[in-house]
Amino acid sequence: MGDCIFCRIVAQEIAGRIAYEDADLVAFHDINPQAPVHILIVPRRHIESLNAVTQEDAHLLGRMLVVARDLAREHGLADDGYRLVLNTNRAAGQSVFHLHFHLLGGRFFHWPPG
Amino acid sequence: MGDCIFCRIVAQEIAGRIAYEDADLVAFHDINPQAPVHILIVPRRHIESLNAVTQEDAHLLGRMLVVARDLAREHGLADDGYRLVLNTNRAAGQSVFHLHFHLLGGRFFHWPPG
Image 1 (spheres, chains in turn cyan, blue):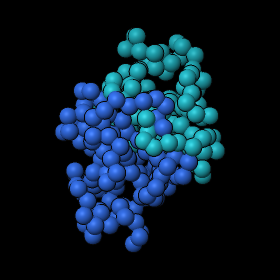
Image 2: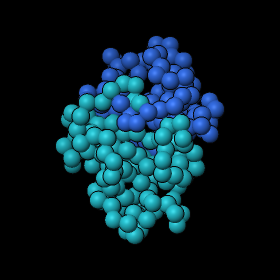
Image 3: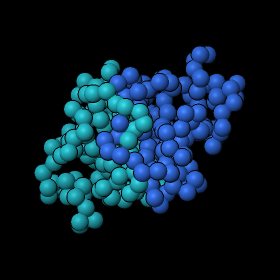
């Protein structure tokens, strides 16, 4: 956990461009954006990936989506649209092993999704 | 709702290749797969998109993710990895206006995600 860059952003040991925070969740702008708006939504608690969640985390996970939706609205993405992506492990391209949703918007997205 | 193809799959009026079902959620294989495993996870209840959810839906939304994780495990994707995608509105490519997660696995995924 001490080496987790997202834990360090959550703890404000590293400066992130914070978009939202509450008791359980933090959202910040991706430093390598793939769209005009690219925000990461993470739980404060270190959860390595979706593989590591339990049934008891369902409400927390769902709140990540509600916060993503609220951020999409706030950033003017709601009408045109936005894509949410959650990568688990290497084949999907998970690069930081602290569970995070990507919220991407402000452009057209292609199919397949990578 | 009568015209919603996912509602009709949920109601078994149209045959879908069902991967999972419970009282609240149904999962079925995409008829136009973008990866060796491509499963859609939907709520039984017709929710048009993530824009239409409320705070009260957080648990249901989180359960969609837990079910996706369980399906990934069941289909042998957990170790190598898998990508989850949720498209909202046209710019993101939402084609069916009944909230659904795409679970994709069995290949390497590129970045950006479409």
